[in-house]
Image 1 (cartoon, rainbow, N blue to C red):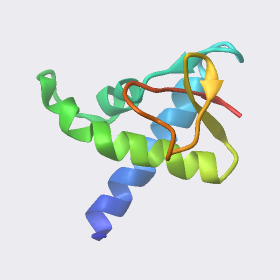
Image 2: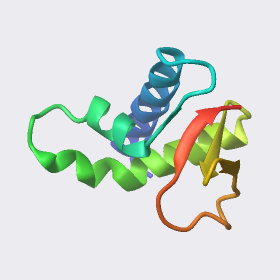
Image 3: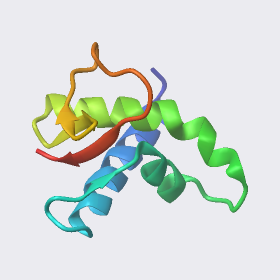
Image 4: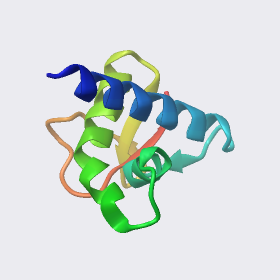
Length: 89
């Protein structure tokens, strides 16, 4: 992993935490919310940040800071298939 990738990962982790802090304690966000927050243009290039945003969410899960959910229930990285949501742990 390059230093640029690590910096992007940290920015995405901060965006996830910041977005959740601005919402109700029970609210969740989509990884795309973090990708859009970090992407610095108006076009849809934020889509290229979706996988890095998901990886950032899983790192935060490992740190005990968030949960990744599907259909309202926490899932593991191995279980997750398709769209996911992120909420506070």
